[in-house]
Amino acid sequence: MIPIEKQKRYYEIPLLRYACCGSRPGMQRSDEEIKGDLLNRMVLDRRINLVNVLVTVRGGVVTLSGVVENEQERRSADETARRTPGVVGVHNELQIRTVDGLESI
Image: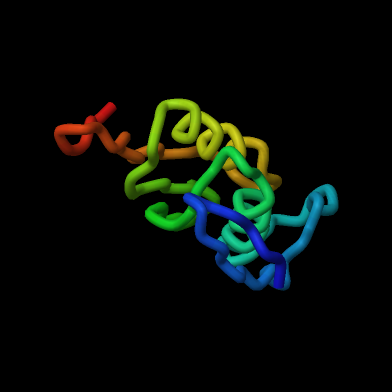
């Protein structure tokens, strides 16, 4: 478990068992391995608040959905997903929370 501070609250988030830094050449990573690795990377990235973010992986394609606070957080999540070994594509469906509600991009 590692403590992280998000929105002045502390969350205890267990590190997933897939702390893989990369994959061996010729080996395809399972969707579960990709998701675990991506979630680990996102937990460690202080620019991303995972509280309202859902990550799904199917056939190596990551879908990010939910709500983030700003465009930087949205871009950071997208960038982190694209840099995760085994990811072949990213669908970024994250919405930005605004004063009046949600902003779709």
